[in-house]
Image 1 (cartoon, one colour):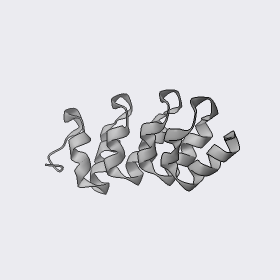
Image 2: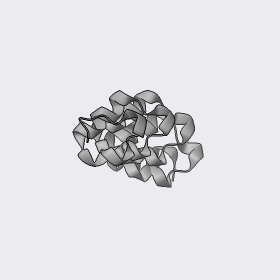
Image 3: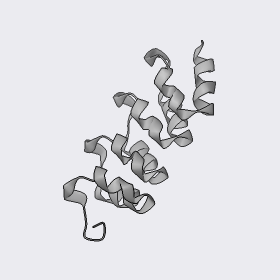
Image 4: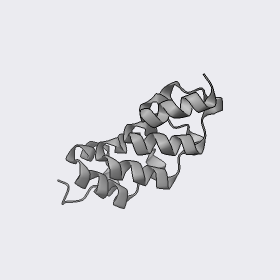
Length: 102
């Protein structure tokens, strides 16, 4: 497959990023993947993960917070993820848990 074929697959299904050879992955492709499927963040190479990408992912589907690297989690992001999906509570670091969440 070519880079363009992989990009088309990722446009159809964000989680297809899992099968794209790393040399074909671009930041743009990663954004397309997470816009399509928040859970695709787990397949984004670390060098392409940004705080903004993590915020978008958690906002799109709260439970996808589990794929957000700890260093990018913020209290606001965790609150948003929890509001979106109460199941995200288990992925909220203790320092960001609030009485409203409990």
